[in-house]
Length: 338
Image (tube, rainbow, N blue to C red; front, side):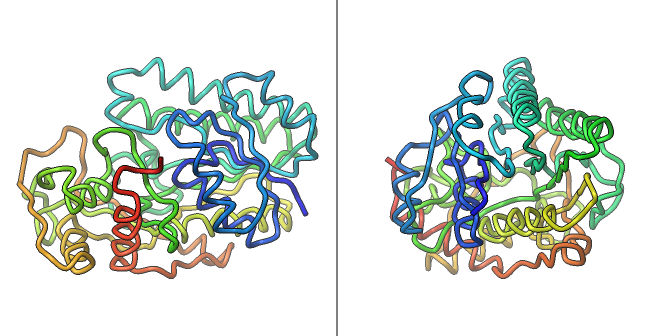
């Protein structure tokens, strides 16, 4: 059984990926400082999988601590989720984002190199495409970013591409996520943001549970079918599966740079998400139209043909499934994972 380090493994996407790794015969080793997650997630993952996990409370910006993980375990590969991820916060605190996201990545790669570990999956983002010239978005589209968070993703992509050129035995996969939502069917893990959510789905579920008074819809005058922004929402369990498929691909291929979009290939508007959630909860959800947010774009959804062709990646969950599972998690965890 191959050991795979999952940095940020107690976080939203990381925790669901840990389950997928176990189901596919890998042994995940979680590295997390719990700055944006809860240690309780480890217990819940063990309950879901009936599997004893190895975990380390470590900040990847501390290279000496990271070194211990590799000294004590024979590591086949790393999936790197650890990083700050709020766009608004990145605009307010750019140095914090550059310091954390870049240094943590550099430390991971340096420690991997020292211990002859040559497989890295990097958690990138559709933000690297900026405001796309057209939709759907293909992997070879021009890259352009509009905020410090997105810039850290793009800079890391560039760093890793430089690194594989200099180290041909090292394999990197850049996975560009679109908009993950949903939760594990158990309701034990899901999206659990600190404070007022930045993302649409946890905001809606907190309105449904009564924590927030209404959903704010940022603009209804976009050039889209119903005037609201259109995004590619993918169930987090489908997204997690994309990581294990990528890991298997890395074991089989001689290519040392893989780049994939992970989405559904279909755009859904804010109102479409809202209406599907209303079906899931069984009642109307209050909302108010407010001004557009600076930097928001009208449409962003993926072409995922490459991931389907090369990985066999295809999504199983539809938008209603995503809403239903998000609501199940919110109901079971009205105050988050405590």
